[in-house]
Image (cartoon, rainbow, N blue to C red):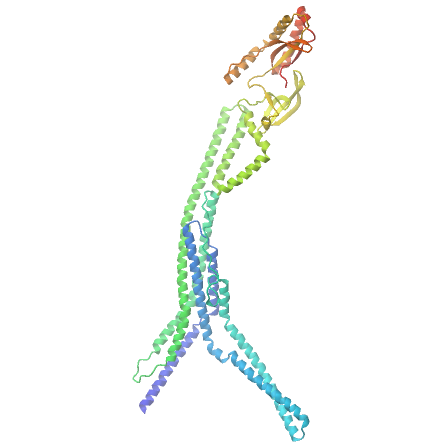
Length: 623
């Protein structure tokens, strides 16, 4: 009898111990429940990190950059999937912890109560209607009883309506509370909708494939601008990676904050299970299996939330290592690019220094060997154009990154400039012909487009001529300056006449009409002797000019001299005496020649008898 009582006491004590342990585990389990806001904040943080990792960091020019980017995208997608897996498990934990309270106030219970009260209210209303129909036909005690029954039914109906209203309010509150209890899972699904390429709502397969790795966007260029753009992109990539590392640290911290309570709960359950196992007492008291089943269920729920979190932290650590390696690779490449950029800048500086040195040499040589101020100025202007072109070429070749685009653009620009500035370009090209070996010099007498004059200036684009006018051999300045574009040299319909370089003479002639039957030979001899008398004063000047021309052209030229010839015209025979005159003394020489011919006619009767009319002096070459 006592043994039985002892066994019963042992069973009671063992049951109480198990109950206490289970109660302690329930309290610890409830205290270490995940926080709904912490779960949602962690999901928001890891989604933001995933979007920044897949969108902001672009691959560079190295093949390894594409590999690093692919690793970042795959690891971030895997971390997001594990985070949602853990979040759904934690949402299930929160739903399981509220099951006891939900059992006491479930919406189904209130629906059943509402149905029972509504049915009773309908029955009472039907009874009240029946009594109301019977009262007019009754009298005496029956009527009195029916009135009392009617009052009782009316009071019961009022009470049922009040109860029904209260039940409806409680039912609405319980339904709203139930909806709020399902809010975590709904929020998780809404967040899953924002990243459908990684995770789908309700744990399904992703509906959209993740973005594939983009090809390297930064192209290697030989231009300084391209090098600067590449270096800037690398610096921006490193800044983005630093931001990703900082965001990844915050995500890891939030994941650790979620994992620590779950790990504490796991440890508590393991310790409680070890304490629950009996030491095989003498009475062989059986252990209650339902307590271990409850602990096993709690352990499974906790491990379902804890394992994805631990895996997520491992993935985040791997992603951090990948980002650090990527940043190190970009930093190494940026150092090489910076050195290459400095060498390019140094090369451009050397090229500019060389061009500047050539320009300075040109300037010094011009001042040393070109003594004519006008010619020196022309050489200096040409130096500016040539050196400016070389400076521009050095700058363009050093800074421009895409020569194919530059060539296309330059081709269109050159074509447009050539069409729009055709005359200007021809004038510039003609300038180099004008200032050439047999070109035009200041002081030269030229004839162009029907205008005869002396050159006063030769510019890069225009030619300035002091206009001369007159009749016959009497030319005088008109006071006007004729301006022609240098491109007039390339116009076939506008010939240009100028003196042979190094000469300053023109041909004039005396036309003497001859009388029939006169001694024409005497007239020829006397007129030629008179012209030679005047010509002898400047013969040496013309011979010297002619010798200079011969030496320059490396040919033998006959010195100009007066000559006489007969010519038959409509008005009779004519004697032409042609002679060279110095341009600067043309009028003076013509006056001397005319005076000499007058003296011949006045002193020689034979010559006078052979001359018909008055001799005329005119230019032998028109224009």
